[in-house]
Image (cartoon, rainbow, N blue to C red; front, side, top):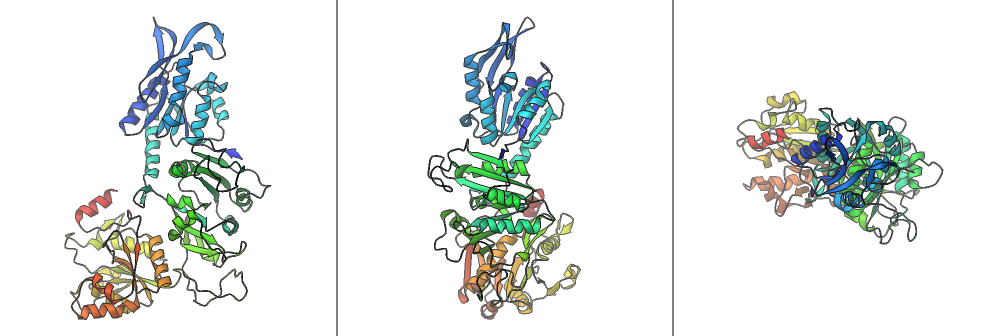
Amino acid sequence: MVATQNRLILWTGPKHGGKTTSATKLAQVASAEGFNVAGLLAPSLYRNSKLLGFDVLDLHSQTRTPLARRTISQSKAGPFTFISDGLKLGNAVLSAEATKSADLVIVDEFGPLELNNEGWRKNVDSLLFSSNAVVLLVVRRELTDTVRQVYANVPCRELAATEGNSIDEVITMLKNRRHHIEGPRFAGTKKMFKLDGMLMIGSAGSNVGKTELGCTLLKKFCKTSDIIGIKVTTIKDKDGQCPRGGEGCGVCSSLEGVYCITEELNRTSDKDTVRLLSAGASRVFWLRVLRDHLLEGTTALLDVIGPDAVSICESNSLRQVVEPGIFLMAKNRDLKRWKSSAQQVKKYADKIVVSDGSSFDFDLDRIKLIASKWIISRTKISAEAKPVNQYRAGQRRREFWCGTKATAIIMAGGGSSRMGTDKSLLPIKGQSMIEAICKQLRGSFDEILISANEVDKFAFLGFEVIPDKVPEQGPLMGIASALEASANELNFVVACDIPKINLACVNRMLTEALESQADIVVPTTGEEKYEPLFAIYRKSALEAINKALSSGKRKITEVFTLCRVKHIELDNTDWLVNLNTMADYEEFQKH
């Protein structure tokens, strides 16, 4: 296995050519942009225009100590003698503790001493294994190729220290990384990456066919796409009980820093990473990471593979910081108890796949890779149909998945009084908001209906427009009219002012509707805060809705007491945006 590290910048230039001066300016600009800058500078010390030596300057505390002074005899590091106090301060500045929250670590400079495995070398190596920061090494131009060879497996970028746009390039790099880290929030506290190109496979327990499932999918798709294989091992405590190999396996105790990423190059063993590589993965990476530093490890992994990479990943814990295109969970039929990491993310599974270790109860042909995005296609599945890849002869089971036919109903009949103009036709990226919603739903539903009284206005969409049976009765009448016209039992009702549709959430609600047989599945975003216009309605709810309407009730929530309702709590609601006012719309357009 070959180690693959975090991002590295070589800040190059000729000897005494202004590298430290430009690094100083970079540190100032990065700090002004709100980035946490750590590391050290090595400012020169002159007397009567003669170079006497260098000091070491802690960028965080601004502490300055002599580092090297000129000597008569030539040493292995040049005509200078290094001072122990300066080396001690520099190594303390570059320690894991001092750099743990840094966005950028500057090391001025990385030279002959480090190439001889002295000076800052040990701490720089550790930083590239364990820190989530961008590491910038100030390097003389003539040493650049040698440093590149030392860190041949590290994603590296070389910038000329004195070129005008080099500082801007580093700042842009930092901003891009910040954007990836500060993505949608999950459960109100944890940050979440949205990776449509990742198919994640979790496991309910040990030896349930997780790797076999990943290998099967790799063999299926590797002929037409380059797919990266990923295995994530989350470690609770380096000194605690190993969650994988038991006492003495070394997975936890050998971890340096808070995470380590290695690339699998071996094809001869039976390890999970080797199996993924043999199954057709273009490359395979293993992320070992302390549980409390999962976000940092994930960020470093994305630095290596890129956020747009197509991948198949084995992990439960990674689902806490990544929202993949598809999240499958593998289990065997005889499993009695789900392991802790599986219980934490079970509710986010798009499909729980039952396996005997070599075959599965789910038609894998329904998994598609389209434009580098993983999706599960919807095909009608009989409740009594035999599973594809059936592993128990004669077995029959009900397939609880949202592949069952469903209708999407877009509510566009409101007056848009708070907006001041028809919100459904407001432009978003060159198309109307209702077109953007239709585009997201098209292909995922067997039927799309538009609930609106002005039939001609929405004829351009190409979908059937359903007017209210009795006008001026509010959205409840619109739902009733559309449900009556729907060709399917299950219906996803969504307001025309919700421009971003989270299909994973819709899938979850459809699955809940199938499993619970509820008439309505409605998400909640807090106590007594419902989203009835982003919910699932069975046609069976019509009786309760018509009863409410006939008694003069107009609020959708007044129907809840008249039928079977299933509430599901939404942990991540950053995507759920209602554009009710022009200020809401302008804010959405801005971001």
